[in-house]
Image (cartoon, rainbow, N blue to C red; front, top):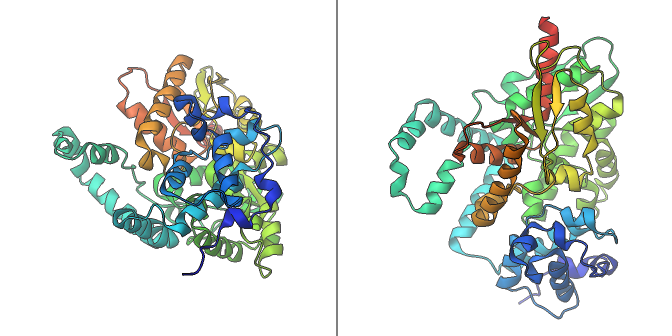
Length: 441
């Protein structure tokens, strides 16, 4: 039987041994904070990874479960004084877990096959599922079942999953956004807009808001109707071959030399999108373009600040009024892309906005891609912790810049018994609303 290839063993060994075991990462790790177990810490996980690379440990079920207990929030990467590239180690370790099949089971294989290998490899299929969910919701079946509390007959885990069913938008991005949106006023830049996969189903309105704000800042915006998943879901879950396929598709669809920037408004996607060169380092046909792609990918907040944001003269509320907002940092926008000041800078530039800082703003909310589906207990603890801090701000609007975070926070707010619940939305949407009010005035 041929030996299974090991991504950790093939990795540059200096990356594996870079951890100094100083422990600076420990207070920043949500799982370690909860359990106080060394194996649940970044330092402990890196020690396990190094043992695999040194042939002192084989890939086991316990190793696989530990790698998937990690949120992948990358807070440890921000805290690390040695600059350990935990994101690369984490993804390589999960790839080893998948290729060794130590977590394989009929149920798990079917779920991964239907989602990663089939559904998210063709967004036409994902949109079809979205239309079915939307039909279910628009016909009132979901609300009726919830009102009659018929979900009580389901196992507890299915009840939890039903409560997390996303509200699917009435129209997808292609229905709302023209393939080409000209700049309003003088043209300064030509950009591409990535509409995403889950983002397109649940937050196509946010994509429209993003395009409108870009146009008002002098950008011609190219938004093709039929796009691909960025591949972050695949890379973070050990499916590197599928992630590479999607990276090539995106580079082919959006040649980086044709745009001043390639815009994303999803923090988790953006962190992955900026590392296509690492993903395709063994592909000479794409490597040069991948490096160019990485340079061109910009988070919407990052890009607006970079080009010199011109704020609207009106705020998102009526003249003379003020709205208090608070901002939750998406882990991969904050720790993965190092973008923290730009969203706050844009919000503070809006008239009628009072920004109240959120305690532990960069502490994970528990969404973490699909972590809230695979590790519901830990995800629930993190969500409760986050919402406790949100309540303390007394803000009427809770903002974030990642679809997974917004969906997770909305589920928590819907279940909360607090009477004063903030409206949760994407930070770019409140900026777009301010520009619309300016146009009407």
